Length: 294
Ligand SMILES: Nc1ncnc2c1ncn2[C@@H]1O[C@H](COP(=O)(O)OP(=O)(O)OP(=O)(O)O)[C@@H](O)[C@H]1O
Ligand SMILES: [Mg+2]
Image (cartoon, rainbow, N blue to C red; front, side, top):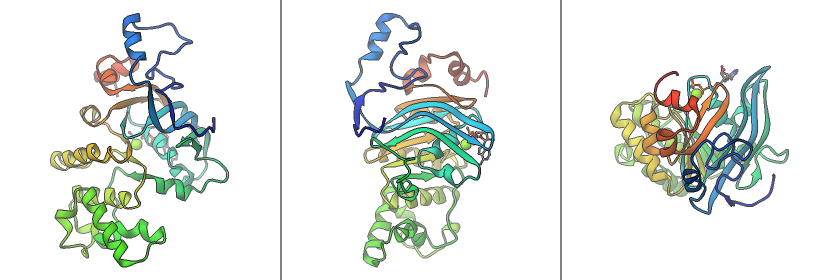
């Protein structure tokens, strides 16, 4: 599975619903619908894919049998009740789980067709290509400028002119520049919650990642700040691939092209966002999106 193809038939191997009907199971939809579902684009560009992924913390399994494709320049939303493994899955896409004691990750994850868990792979480089923004904004107790320059300095960039240029670009990208351009020396902690979250997004963007993982990035924000983050996600999609965890179903519907539903450590179903919210294939998905549990 370590081939280097980056263009594959759409969700050709995805399980748990996906964009294709599982051949091992009887068709659950009328043939005419199945034909329509099977014939979208002939191929999509895959940015990442996970196969049979399982993560255990000690002897407790947090996720298992997760097989999913992440399409390039799209937003994939992940939904599901608390504790179902969304953050665990997200962290396995950039080897963030490696930092957790007693963790075991099995299965396969690829970035541009290359295994990210290979013995020769440097997790730091994976994290540079696959950046992350967390639920609670976590600026460093440093200036706004240094918060954004942080990853660049670690990557060995020390020339002031380059740092200044890259910091401005990242702050513009994160729709924060206009609000902070005259106070770059002030502490990042002095910003409002919504600004701090955009600062963290700028920090993640500064190293120009190819994929951005966002774990409930707007859950602590007011509606205006939330709208800004959502607008940002929509704009960033032109340049990067985004995987976003959210408990807000309207947000998933607004920002994503595809949605995956996790339940009790498994990916129950993944597919086109409109399909998931209007015609879910699985009963569990329907119960969740209609508020019957979770
Ligand atoms: N660092 C850890 N050590 C031990 N167990 C963990 C750790 N992180 C998560 N877990 C466990 O793994 C399971 C999945 O947790 P995870 O945080 O991935 O869920 P989640 O879907 O993101 O939940 P939420 O919506 O509340 O953020 C839970 O049972 C949780 O207790
Ligand atoms: Mg979580």
